[in-house]
Image (tube, rainbow, N blue to C red; front, top):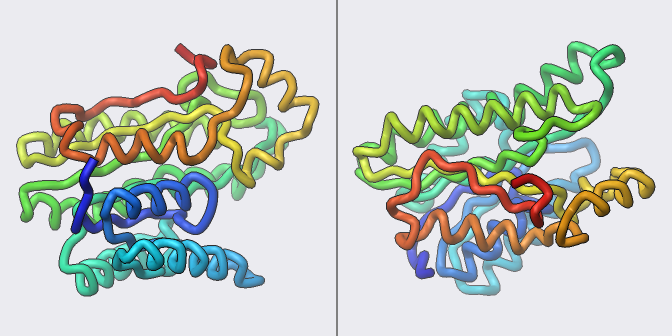
Length: 252
C-alpha cells in the first residue's frame, strides 16, 4: 500500500490507536499531522512530540497540533494550519475519544455530554472542517474509529455506546453524500485494544471479556492501524459507508 505524499490528519494521535495509525501510515509514505488536546501536566504534548520524532525519523513531514475536537472553531483553525503547512488534507482519521463509564442512574449530565461532545460531535466537527476541501480536490478518505460497544452495548457505557453507534450512522450518511466526489467514508469498530485505556479495566473484568473472545486476546494497536491503512489506500477505492469489525470474533 503506497501512501507516498498523502497528507493525513489524525485526531487523538498522541497515544494508543491514534499513535499506531499515525506511525503505520507514515511507514507507508504519508505525511502526518498529529492532533492532541492540552492537559494540565503537559503529558499529551510530550506524547505527541514523541510520535512526531518517531515519524520524522522515517523521513516524513510531520506537525503537531493542539485542538479540542469538541470545539468547531478550534478544529477549523487546526484544519487550516494543516492545509497551510502541507498544502492539502487527503485523509482524515477521526480517532479522538474518551470514556466516562458509569451506570445511567449514577451518570451526571457532564459525564454524558463530554463523551458525546468529543466522541460524536468531534467527528462532525473534524469532518465538516475538511469535507469542502476534499470535495474541491475531488478526492478524500475519512475513517472514523467506532467500537464494538457501538454494536453490542456494554454495562455502564450508555454514553460511550451511544456515541460510537452514532459514529456508525454518521459514516453511512456522509458516505452517500460524497461518494460521487471520489471520497470514501468508512468506520472501524475494534474490540478491546491493548492501550492505556484498556489498562483502566479491572483485572476480573478483563478475564471475563477474554473468555468471550474466540481468539482469546485483545487486539494490538498496530492491527487496527493496518486495517485503517488499507481503507485509506487506493486498494479500497470501492469501499464506502462500511463498518469493519476487528475484534477477534467477539462480535460477528
